[in-house]
Image 1 (cartoon, rainbow, N blue to C red):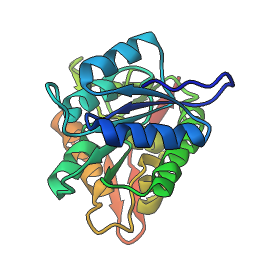
Image 2: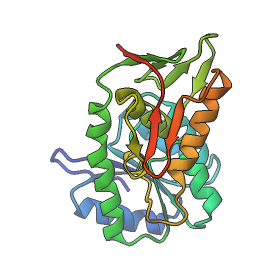
Image 3: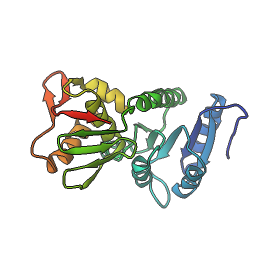
Length: 241
């Protein structure tokens, strides 16, 4: 079922193979003023995405055929992809961590109360213009690296391209726009949609650790430094363009 409204409204792409749950979620979101596109699997979701860009993607981990994690990875690497809210019935920490590492903006365990689902979607919609505003510079050069912000393409001195997830790119841009400034862990968590009150959420630490490894593998020193008890900062000269 595809439910549409004649008014201009945010569009939600709902990718969920459970037809009953998908219908219930679609009806609720439609009642809250959203246009909803439904997809039972990744193939149908890709068809919707080829036709236009939704405002938010709700993506189940367990799908028939291509799973949600694979689709999430592809979407996170694509230019201009919408924010992704991942769903899982399992609730295992490894699934949550893997989903965030592959580029999901938020992650919840089913069943999720409708009001919480709505709050999560609205939070993603609020952060979307903030991310756009924070990308005023289209590229940065720093410490022997060059970052193309729009493409999330990081190149080292040897011209090797380093792939970044959505969260890694968002954190790196935040550092590049504020070189030498200590950015609090909680602020970085809000930037990527991590729930730091959740004991399972070590998202910021994981993303920082992976970003450090990617930079250090092609550089001669750690560019991201820790200010114990306060947060992280970028120790490099930055040239925006």
